[in-house]
Length: 100
Image 1 (cartoon, one colour):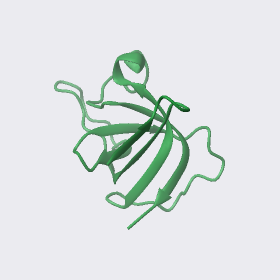
Image 2 (cartoon, rainbow, N blue to C red; image 1 turned 90 degrees about the vertical axis):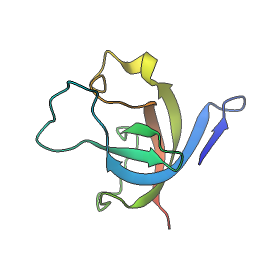
Image 3 (cartoon, rainbow, N blue to C red; image 1 turned 120 degrees about the vertical axis):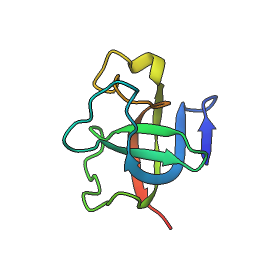
Image 4 (spheres, rainbow, N blue to C red; image 1 turned 60 degrees about the horizontal axis):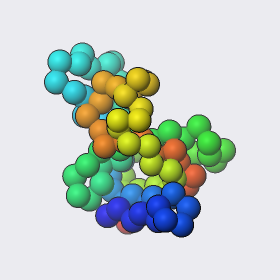
């Protein structure tokens, strides 16, 4: 599920699975996968957790999570470290919670 409040504050909440981000075709896989969120509608988003102080460090792949933050579309971040990933965008995370 994706909930957009763009008109109000530019915040987005995405609920889904904490999972490895898919690579674009032709991009060599790094040694370790980069974790992001796979939303319930099947889209992948990278997570920039640099703005949260109490990042939940015990999350595991496939945990169900809810992230709230500001969404930067893939077209806005393709010159960054995320350019090799097949993602919808990057969430600048304010909160990240494990859900059920």
